[in-house]
Image 1 (cartoon, rainbow, N blue to C red):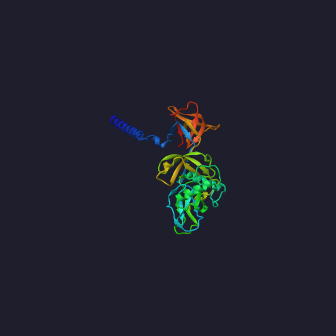
Image 2 (image 1 turned 90 degrees about the horizontal axis):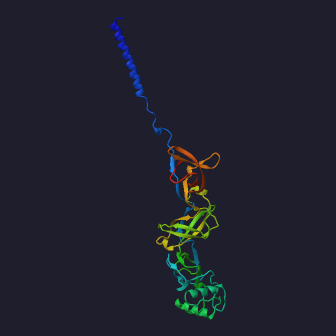
Image 3 (image 1 turned 135 degrees about the vertical axis):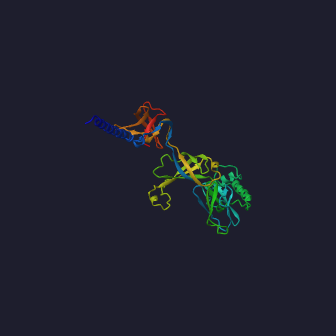
Length: 356
């Protein structure tokens, strides 16, 4: 082979080598990049350990209103000639309604008048009469339960104030004895109806909160207990649990099949420490905060940050610049998805791994 031929072979061979190298180089440069970090495991979520207060107080929903009503029945004979307006508040000595234009008056007490008081007798009904005459200013205060001449004189003066004949004799049908002032909640009869019937529906004049509670969850709810009330108008006041029912009943149903799974409930009745706080609103939902055990100024993490140890107990995974480290902890109070913890070296501001 001539020298020129050898030179051509070399040139062709070199070109092939360079071409191969070029392909190889192209393939190296075209190699897919490493998968982005987002395609790998998600970074661990962390939360800070905080120093705060924990409380097992619970918020429940009650209803503002005037409490259970009571029906007033007249024992007088005749015709109803006047009735009060719904919503009116009546105090001791005021007229509840009129029969044949004669007033039927409100007295305070626990014993109804059950006989005509027209002669020297004694008993709890006489005591009620004398206590009310004293409160209304017609009789000096006395400690006896006897119907004396002074009592008869006071009855006459009271009758004069009502523009009645001053007979000094008290007909029990002319008085309705109730524990205290009342608010007219409903009219059960109309003017012109026979008097001897249900006449009025009344409630207390003070607003109260009715709190339904699952019968198996009344712990911490007892008569005399103090609660916080957030009223429908946004105002906050204290409250005192007056009573807790003992007769459990299913909660009201709206026709939902799931209502059958609801637990029986009892009602707790709560009085407002400040009636003025409810001014301008007669009814509506109330947030009732029932106090519970509390811990002040403790280290707290979400319950989801706890890790159960195989040997028992719990730990938290503390995140730092060099990775994470497990720290054994003792748990304290649990409340609202958080837990009190103590452990070696733990302090507020440290970050711990959590599952959510």
